[in-house]
Image 1 (cartoon, rainbow, N blue to C red):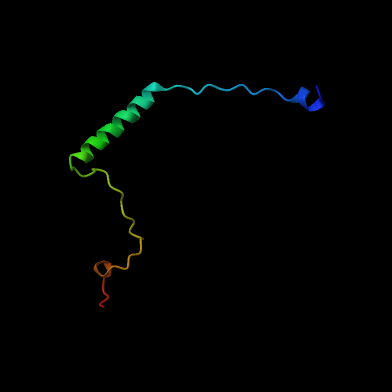
Image 2: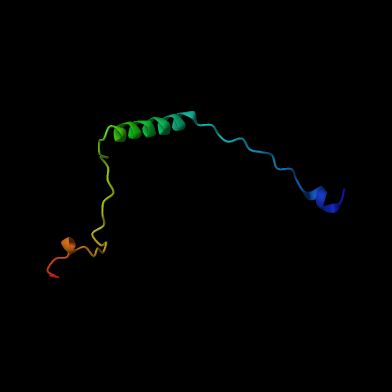
Amino acid sequence: MSGNEAFMKKKKNKKKKVNLLQDYIKTVKKMNREAELASGAKRIERVVKSKKTYTRKKKHRSGEEG
């Protein structure tokens, strides 16, 4: 054995913690979401548009004509 091999330690593979309950909940939520959207329903929760967002569309301009 050389000097480097003596100091090198074998890394043990850590087993990932299995959390079946969280995986189950995540899967059920995803399936419910897809089922609701498949029937043509709109999403209840929408992203709120920032008031500070700049837009160039004419309908959003106030006080300007042209």
